[in-house]
Length: 234
Image (cartoon, rainbow, N blue to C red):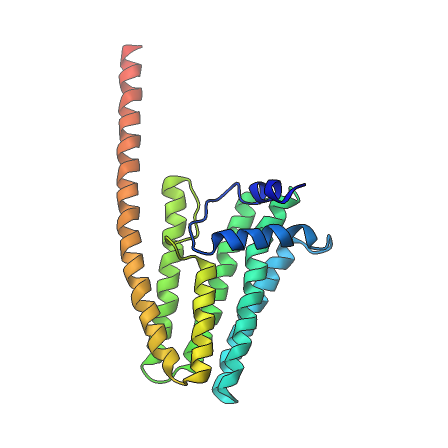
């Protein structure tokens, strides 16, 4: 099977809008056929969660031993990407996709990963910046809720907020970890800036979601009225 056919098969269920979508999809298309048969999609989900646990460990070691251990978190993000990005695509490739099982498992494990990473930062941070860590987790959870509600309202599933998706967030946070090793303390202000951006995006997306919900309500109301008129004619 050609890479073009594999790519169409793997991504037929979703449209990506993030900046790195093209190279990311090409890499996934290259990797999926090479995954050994004994590795299942559920195993990849577990590998992705292990990557998040490694990020938590990196924060703990950086807090109590040396800040350079934050670089271990970059490896954690790479492992997290590997498991999280390939698990569902592997199921599609092997024609073993379980839409609602996979959807439910993915959301639950993403939330567990978010909590672990946020908790790691809270352990590492000091003073008022611990609250910033809580806000970060809350904002990311808010964006996850918006994503699920958008799916419910529009019947179209997307994991991106415009040009930014989970992959871009991993890259940004990895760069933040590198900057923290070079300039200790800068992570607190960068995380605060990320929180401010997430708040803005979430408020915007919430407004758009409510408008889409209002449009669907009007469409369903119009359809119901049309059905009632047809019944009266009959």
